[in-house]
Length: 266
Ligand SMILES: [Fe+2]
Image 1 (cartoon, protein in one colour):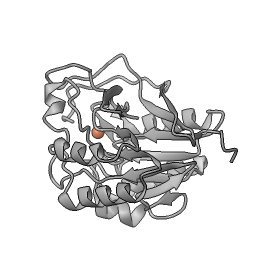
Image 2 (cartoon, rainbow, N blue to C red; image 1 turned 135 degrees about the horizontal axis):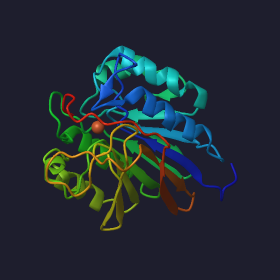
Image 3 (cartoon, rainbow, N blue to C red; image 1 turned 90 degrees about the vertical axis):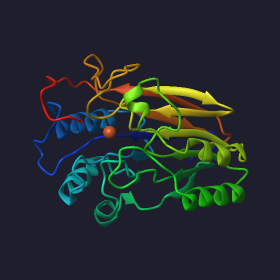
Image 4 (cartoon, rainbow, N blue to C red; image 1 turned 120 degrees about the horizontal axis):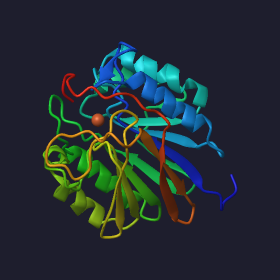
């Protein structure tokens, strides 16, 4: 790859697939909205260099739901990295999503950038937490690579997003996470899912980027659970340059479906 060319990363998140391909989340057939997302990814020129899946890949944590993801993503043939969200089953993900183009790797380098993927999920809880072991490993890894521009990915947002019902389930020990990041200025980006909406906020020199789901969208700035009826499913593109510069944008997917607010809750 030309040294000045950016690495194009596509972050796709919160697909919430079911074992049943016709399964619906609040009226949205999530397999269909994910298929529409994949069509949009396939139409991109240039094609992304890698795919980052940031949690809630499955709604029911079943092996079948992860097999669907594997099959649906195969036309893209992109190196695909993943981390779990609160709806996922880590053990099942490890068993299913472990063959090319999926990588089980959670720390890797490409185009002068380092990627570190963290597991912030807590079994049986909606909120996020980073264990001492994970934070120690992160600190150690960052100390070893202090000249590498770094992107850290996790499922839960470390910052509040101004929606009290979502803010109740963000990363519970964000201060511990920040304490590590503050020691390592090479960290430039923290990307996450969970909030089903776009978010971009800077803290110190780090940009915190939240990304729309490939399924349902949540209404921004809402104190109670509320769906955004206007926004389509989406994903994030990131251009990462070897000298540490970066650019990002959100892509929306041409997909609409009648929401069913009487359906079972999120
Ligand atoms: Fe989600």
